[in-house]
Length: 252
Image 1 (tube, rainbow, N blue to C red):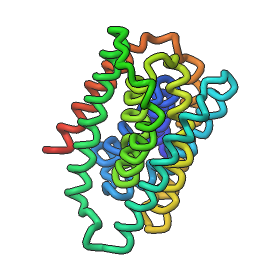
Image 2 (image 1 turned 45 degrees about the vertical axis):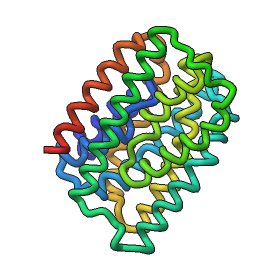
Image 3 (image 1 turned 180 degrees about the vertical axis):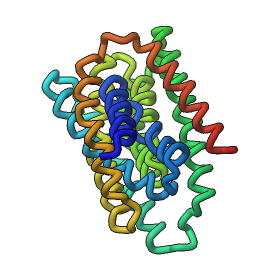
Image 4 (image 1 turned 180 degrees about the horizontal axis):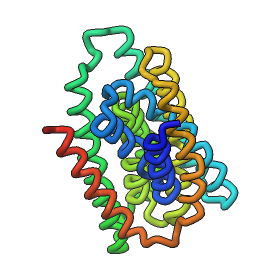
């Protein structure tokens, strides 16, 4: 076991359990910049890491009835076909396969979008803003899923951060704990499908995956137990600043 990978997995799992954010948004750039993993291997490995880690989160949040299954289904209705289509296009047309530099730029843009989405979601929640979206939120949810599916399949970023933040806006009356649980339940099948496809393409480091999981599985259990003890405003502001810094570092 390489303890620094396990420690990184523990941190990522804890943040996912606590906020629904922190899997792809933090782990992929950390693997690229701190550990020197190639971007495509980092994306593929992180997708399977996120799927297996968040499966534990589904169990923890499901026991507390914190998952809104109809919303999860609407998200999957858009995200799974979008992810499969994106990965099929990349596999069938090699000229469309982004190179390592482009992957870093796409990843940086996804992180910037994630930081912005987190900030907007936090602002709306803090101000008690209701955008009166409940009438058409069910129709917008599959579109949100399609956007997340495309981003996740290319960068592993978006399932947690963008999904959680967008759900805060689309469903302002839903309790935060249920939004986090719903987003985690949506992320499991999406990241598993995309991760298996990357495994087939040879973009997964099995030893790295095992080391990350050794830390993340207890981490997500601990994070879900601590949910509600740490102020939402503090955790999301910290994550927004961290994601912004990682995006700017990737663009250098």
